Structure formats: C-alpha cells, structure tokens
Length: 161
Image (cartoon, rainbow, N blue to C red; front, side, top):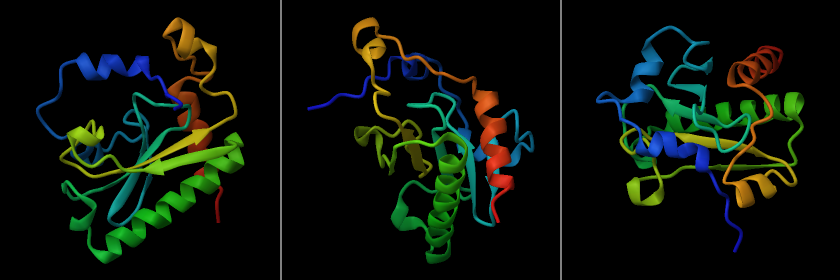
C-alpha cells in the first residue's frame, strides 16, 4: 500500500475551525485573489485549497450549501464536471502534470475537512511527488507559493477558449 503523507495539513486539522462554512464565506466575499477563487460559474466556483496535497490542488464547489452530491441538481452536476474539465485543461497547459486525483470526500469519516459543503477535489500529480521529504523528514516541499500558483492558473483559465 502506498501512503500519501500530508503533514502540512496538521495546521488545519488541529487549528481552530471557523463557525461559518468557509466555502460559503469565500463564495460571497468578493475578494477572489485573496480567497484564491479562480473561476466563477453560474452555480459553482473554483478555488485553490489553502492546505494543498500538491501544488495546484483545486476545489470545485457549489454556491449552495449542501452536504452530498445527490443533493446537486442535474444542471449543477453538469456544471461541476464542466468546470472540472476546464481546470484540468488549464492545469495541463500551465503545469504539465503526469496525472490527477479527482474526487470527493463525503462525510467526516471519509476524510472531508468541510463535511457540510460538498466539493470536488482536483489534485495534479507528478512522478515522485511523494518523494523522500514527506516520508523521512515529515515535511512536504511545495515548489511554488500559493499566490504564484493562483496567478499561473488564473492566466491559464482566462486564456482557455
């Protein structure tokens, strides 16, 4: 079994949790760059994960506060997949990953950090991205600052047809 170590997420796990839904708050604040919101659709929006598993880790979330994918209307499900595909193209064009992990963690026991607001994770992957640093040093190296990744992906998304 291969294990993906994510020790940098401990800050989130042990840290104080906001009382409001973070995904609802970021959707309406209007400070997109500060909140790492990359793209807005009619029913969904795309933002970067503040505690990423890898550089370029994105989330596609509905504006509506719902907990599970079966609560999504058909048109919301369609837009979630459309935005996911758009993000894959932008990440491929700007970061050249070797692959992706795409999926949802539904419920706390499934690993959902924000269990009351469903969202799709998009995690770019590169050969060796779980190198010796996380395994031996309990440290994840992120090769690019979040705002630099934001600017790179924002430009790539804006340049898609």
